[in-house]
Image (cartoon, rainbow, N blue to C red; front, side, top):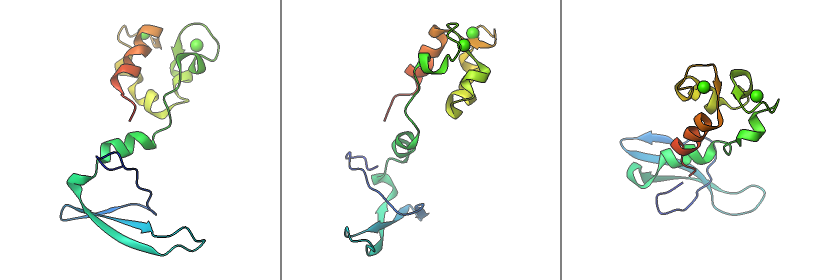
Length: 113
Ligand SMILES: [Ca+2]
Ligand SMILES: [Ca+2]
């Protein structure tokens, strides 16, 4: 995704050489599109936004709380990689589960792209 809001689809990963990012881009819509390497300056590309956009949408508290006890346990959080990683820091009262309030902090900390 570029900083001007343009979303660019590329084939495979980009490569970065001396601050230039090279993407493989299809140039027509045929079944075998011609693919060209396109280089743009790294500053033109918002990689953090690209990464965020690639993440799946944030789950709702309700969808994670499988047993509807009003808390998201570590097992329930394991459904979502990003949440699982953040679980310990989100569990501010260290009771091993995320309350709705603790989960709200997660939604706030990670703005959607
Ligand atoms: Ca639960
Ligand atoms: Ca907690």
